[in-house]
Length: 242
Image: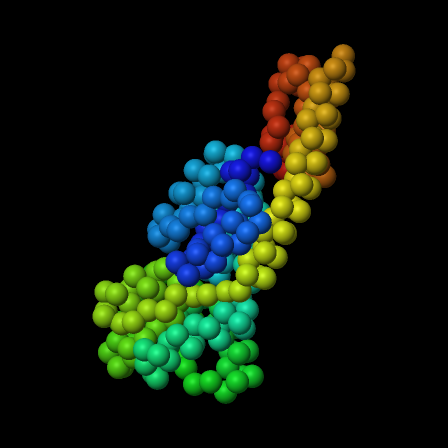
């Protein structure tokens, strides 16, 4: 398998180190990147152009990618073990703690809080542009320690707050990697079938065109291109009244 078919976008330096340890243990050569939120989509599209077929990420970054790119995004799950670990680190810094994150992370935090009765503030955001305002507000309300990802850590530094980077356990990382490799095998099998069907179509002497239920051309052989004067993606059904 090509090394760049699966890539990992990490959301914290702590998680990056854990990912690297898992990859070393399993002797896997998978690229791991840490990007600023504003660069994520551009970098993802660069990776896709270079042959990436699956991206592994987490939280808000995974949601952003899933909503904006054309390849599958596998998520590293939020786990209670990771939550426990970051809270213990945060308590060393301060007893007044706030966690800032996207819905998936905050849901995990709430479940953990309900089970343990731990006291800490949960600040849910829906885009990275909100993070600075939240961090600024926490600073003004005498919070000294925040938990979150790369953007949270960056904003915490700006407002002189301690930052504890999000964490996870090796099992969640391994599950995401296993899922990615399983999906990659499926995608490669389907791609092989597609190549074979294209070859068979182009061996035919007739013009052959395949369309879906909406009239969009999903496949056409070389003779069909010349004969029908249309291309994959064209819609050949006209709306009534036009």
